[in-house]
Image (cartoon, rainbow, N blue to C red):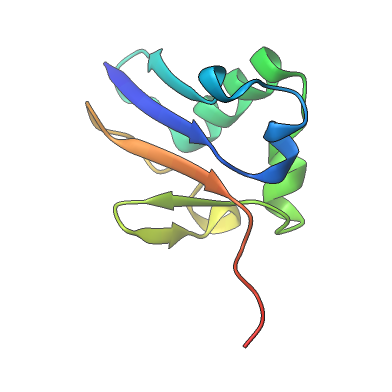
Length: 91
């Protein structure tokens, strides 16, 4: 199975050139969001799980913000995209 990860948060811009911030990731079937986060953390050298838990970064999945602490075990499907962004604040 293949999913796409788009690493748009500022934390990734500091360590990855623009051309390396969209990744196609091959995964075993029934892989979870947490598994992808662990694999990406190893690849980029950033503790992404800590960024998600501290809410400095959020994941957009299926046009909504994924609640990482509650949905880390969500099983991904072929072709899904996970977009890692900084949360929007202000008003």
